[in-house]
Image (cartoon, rainbow, N blue to C red; front, side, top):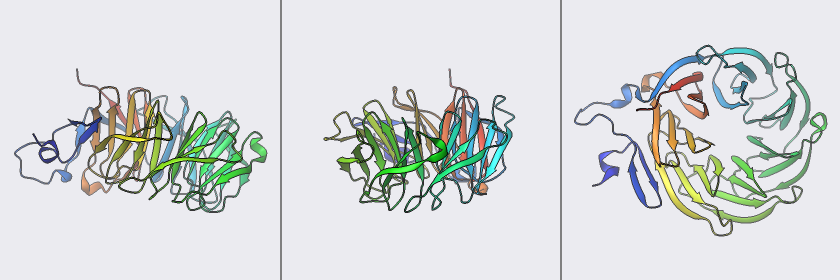
Amino acid sequence: MNLQGSNPYNIMVMNGIVLALSLLSQGVETDSSLFADSLNLCTIAKWTRGNTHYVIYDGQYVYASTLERTISIIDISVPDDPIEIGNIRVGNVPLGLAKKGQFLFAALGDKGLCAIEITDPSIPEIVSCADTPDSAIIVYIHGNYAYVADGDSGIRVISVADPRNIREVGFYDTKGFARSLVVSGKYAYVADGNEGLLILDVTNPASPKFVNSMKLESFANAVEVSGKYAYVAIGKEGVRVIDISNPTDMKLVGHWTGPGAALGVRVLGDKLTIGAATGGVRLMDLKEERELAHYRPPKYTRDYVFEVILCGNYLLAASRSGLIVYEYTPQK
């Protein structure tokens, strides 16, 4: 049985096993993109202050980057009624966000990295900034260091031991376009654009060392790591699953393909979320290797999903339409 042919929308392969994740209507000759395609997800709220392209959640508040050069702090204690409790306008379009204690760190493109005090979330305040050579896109906090994916200037390492005086202490100029990264243990895993996945040893943050790299079929947009696997979003080619148990000998062991283009991936426990651009929101079970839920918006909405995070039984999507809250109701 050719699953790819019978279901061109949603295929996952792990360790050579092809899994059909969901079947769209069969035998109906129509353009399914004209209608919403939903599985186990229901839209319950929309926060529409602006085009939202990155979100994080700290267990109490959601922090959202918007195209309007604003970072908003949103209370979602009542998921169907998100309330903005504070915001700050910054000097550039904010991209990636990370939080450490009472400080939020924002990647601000050609304005570098900024530290924002959020002791009182209703009045966030920029307290320090560190310039980067190119364009700060994603920031990841590990210990007292912020690791910044800085586009054509690779990875920049910034000390955040004193959030009021952040400063660059190291860097590694990658071959590709550093689009995203995560740090786990002594390694940094970098989505390096056309160069694929890059692993750096950051035992000494001031002097990261090359360990290994793997080129992929398309531009690496984002990366997440869980256990011995790295999950790399590579646009229309989907998500690639890479065994990193031996960093010097990475192995491609699986993939997911579906509608749209994989832009963002996040892992929480054994769940993987995918921001799939026009393909919408995807929730995967990594243990069972299957799709649990999805929502693809109708084409006429022109919506575009960048990132998705899982919060209990809710999914929060950063999209052109704003912050969208979905309730996840698994099938019994």
